[in-house]
Image (tube, rainbow over all chains, first blue to last red; front, side, top):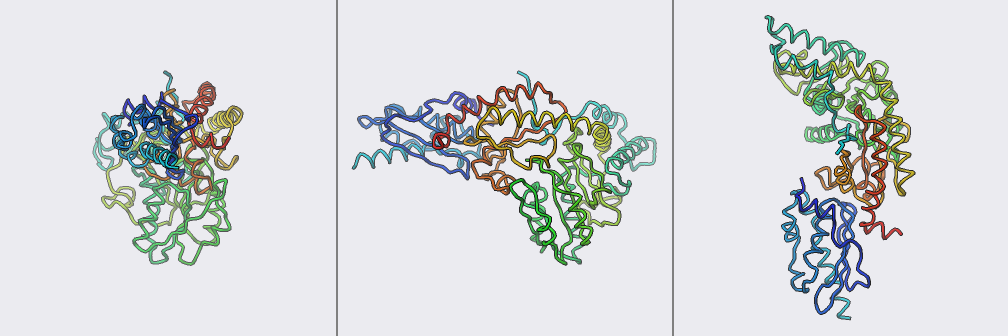
Length: 123
Length: 388
């Protein structure tokens, strides 16, 4: 039921872990629906230079987390903010319909991390 | 890669003996059992023999059996059929929170017709309180419907005691024995059940055949109106090959049950003890003794069930999970949450259900690969990091 790309990212997830001295951190999801994602980012000159994730969740949750880290690494913040959950699902050649809204939260985690970074830098 | 099935509560393969027995009725003996001519005689004999085998398995009379298409149909027929037949006597049904959807959703559907259902809670072991059951009975109560054994945890309800209460209070008692059949004896006389459901594909017969025991004197309104089949209680030309298959399957189950149960129990115990010894933060779900010998449900804390299943599948092992992600719904297992498990622990549950094909080598392999799978998923989990 999962695409080859989903299974590839699930089996060999990219950028697992937490960035040291992260500039921004975002956690989304909840235990009731079974998916919790935590994304940490390092930002230099308005660019995401490092990004890592930790995810509790199903195959789709892990694959979308992994994919979003690949999509944003090296991107400037504006481009990163333009990435949506749909972009991530598309990059994985789609997700099963039932997973589209429950396990497709990786871009939300990214946006939360960017927001966290912005809040910190304003101070 | 070797393929190992630890998901026998989902379904079972058709046994060779069963396949051989049913084959002539798919090719060759094609007649209608209701026909009096040469083509119908062989199939008629086969249906009678299948029924006889089922009667022996249930310890009941031939008029007390109805062949259906599935466990789901049997449960629908038992509950709706009884409710409709007794609607002048009362409108109250008692069941539990941990039933199969074919019972829960049937009761839900009956609510639209004015029937009311009490859903009994279960405790942390997955068992119901018999005092609560008795207290729930009102003068309007017409039916008690409970599982014999739970499909997710294997927990066995005290059927004999429930039957005694039902009998004492004059309430009809239906037991859904879909998971129990072939794993624990089902003597309907000793158990005091009035209605009892089984399904062929859970005990090495094919999909598409089920049966319902209906105690003499218990009247049901049919779901399927048609000819005289099944004593006017279920219309439709008999599924001859399916009936032959079910007959053979229950014959084999009766013959092999004692030895197989012992073999399952030994493997189940090794899985439980092995997981607990090798992997920290695991919990066996359900009462430790009052359980089917073939079923073990384990929660692996901090990780989600579907991701464990995908990892197991990549290693050739089939299992299932109480995680929402595997059910097509967005909720984790209603069975595990009813037992008081947290959402995380319900999502992190894996059910291993043993069957005839399993060997001690399969158990060795499972215990060998599972720790690394859990560790890998935990290393990716934000919950695991937070717990440290």
